[in-house]
Each structure stands twice: as C-alpha cells, then as structure tokens.
Image: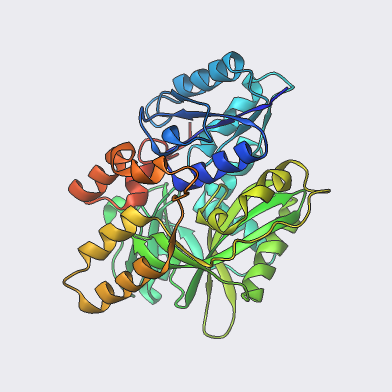
Length: 379
C-alpha cells in the first residue's frame, strides 16, 4: 500500500524539493499550507493540497487542522519544512503512535531556534561562537560600546529585526527587552549549511555561500566543497548534541581561519537544493543502510523570480547590478523541471502573496514568506 507523507508547508522551493523527493520514492504527498495557492500546489508530485490556519495567527487551530488532516488522509509521516517546524513539533503528542514526525521534540527545536540558548549550548560543547548577551544586561551594553555588534530578536527568522551597528552605537530602548540579544560582529566569509542527521551523525551536509541576497536571505547560492573547518564545526555540534533530523547553521570563517557559528536553524534551508532528490528520502528514513547521498552536478542555483527582483532593484548600483546579473545568468533555477513545469511557469500567480509583499511593502523575500508561520515568542 502506498504510504502518505504530510508536508507542513508548500510555498517555498525547499518544500517542492521534498515533495518531488517523496513522490520519486513512491510516496503519496499531501501538503498543508496556510496559503490557498502556493508553489507546490500545481506540482505533479503533490496529490492533494489543503489550506490550514496560519500558526502565527492561532497555534491551537493550526495543530487541530494538522491533526485532522493526518486522520483524514491516513498519513504515516509528517515532515516539517521551514519556520512552521517549531509549531509542528507540538503535534507529536496529538498523533497516534504509528504516525511519526521527522523532527526532534519541540523543546530541542526551540532551544536551537533561540539565538541566545543556541550560543550557550555551543559553548558547553567547547565550540567557537561570538560573545552574545541578553540586550537588557550590562554585558550587552559593554559589548556594544567596545566594538561592532549585531542586535537581533531571540527568535529572529529570515533576518527580521537584525541590525549591524558600529562600536559605541547606543542600544535603542526598544531593543532592551527580554526577547533581544546583542552579539559581537565577526568579519569574514559567511557560510550556510544544511544537514540530515541521525543520532549524532551527519548523514549528509551541504555547505554553501550566498551570491545574491534579499535582505539577509540568499536567493542565489553556490556550493562550497572544501570548507573543511566549517564541516568539522558542524559535525562536532551534531555529535555532541546526539541530534536527529534536519539542522542548519550560519557560520563565519574569520581571517585567521577560526570558524564560529552565529546561529542555528533547526529546519530545511536552501542547502537541500544541492542534493540529488533520489537519495533524500532514504537518507531521512533509512540512514544506516542508505547509500551515500549524491550531490547534483551543478554547483550554482537560484530562486529565479526573487533573484530577478534583486537584480532589477540594484540597477542603479552598477557594481551590484553587474554582479547580480552575472549570477542570474549563470545559476540554474531550483524550481524548473521539464517533467514538472507548472511550479515555475505559474510562480508569478501561485507566489503572488509573497512577491507582492516583497515588492509593495519592501519586505525581503524571506520575511514575506515566513511572516504568518514564524515563531516569535513563547507559547
């Protein structure tokens, strides 16, 4: 009998990658999505798409919607995709024992999503991280006075609320609250990662760097194969945490070669686009026996429409415009597939809500895509 997987988001390209991966592995794919229309809805990989309450609006109703879908569609596996993962993890206690969620407990996810708690955990593993303090503390004020620093919400996502300030810049009274941190700014090469982990072992890790960004979110990116110090940091953390599930990091390699992680994203990131989809499901569900996960031959990818938008926005900044145009023309789109063309061809319509917020409200693509699913404060 065909098994059914429930993906708890469909609007983002990484959700489409997961849908195609499960469909190619013989699974029936159902998507739960607050948007009525979204990227994955028109994909041949998706059997059914169902609209649910946005978790940022009503967490209880959201979980009840998911519970009902699991029962009605006879779902065997629930796979969270993006920022909604923090909400979905609470579903575990509401499901029958024979239904699994591909995620650790909500407690684990929230500790890693918490920008301050993550730093504390990394320090306990003796891993390099920038000095980070609660914004209300005297230590935070001293850190801001002594050098360049970053201010960001404890539960920030998609770069929302992140500010990079010079030494001595006073802390805004609005920032001095229990849900904001101050972190030492470290100059250097920024890397991002995506891993599928099982019981403290990295089954596969892809490391990449942004080539075009919308706000602070990469919309074009290039795989990096030789960042050994970055890979070592990631594998040490996964091992120390005995972690299982999706996990991603943003890291900086400074001029002296020291690698420090600045935050953790315990979910799927754009790093999944570098993986051969035929190997992803086996890596998730049979990590001990699955063959090694292969990378795609292409090393440069883009999300075409937001990348095009960023290129157009930079038209009066010659250096940025030429660089963005170069990456726009040389990177392969993550959505286009000749055997499944509608997600790309219809994206201006299915992603209209995201694109409209990005263009008319001045939000980054990442902010627009996560505003109704983000976790911003304790329940």
